[in-house]
Image (cartoon, rainbow, N blue to C red; front, side, top):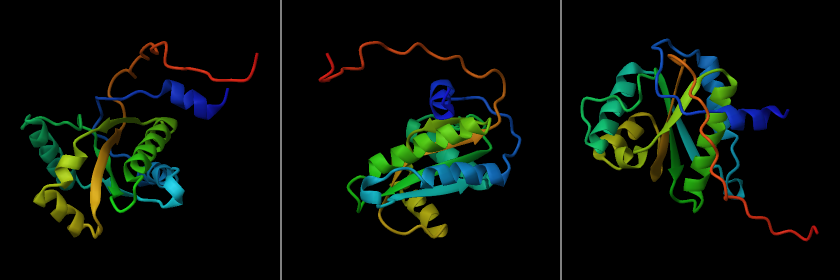
Length: 177
């Protein structure tokens, strides 16, 4: 079977992680998968932050929990590493481009035997003065919007079971008789 399709079929969102650090080589491969994602007119409007610094990871977790109104929780489920995907608003396809990058990255994490999960609220985080300051401190310039966080790590426990696929979502218009 095609390994791409197999990874698409078997990838799941993981919400329980071991604290073990993920090797930089694996994180770099995940980032590369995001940077290689298709983009509107090949404008490559996506910016990716690779975060393994515990202080910054925890700061982003606190910011994310505050947006949810759930201070004191860890919306990153203990994952030791995360990526923040941003889109440059000057390009009309930035949201789609960033979403494609997130998809590629989730599939590459799965291929590497790592768990991952898309965590929302990056938009709200990076619209705050604190979020903008984090971007400036990392050298990120331009008018960016947060697309999502991709938490990554080694799975703690069993891999989630697949959910049934909902029927009635494919419609075919064909000349085939």
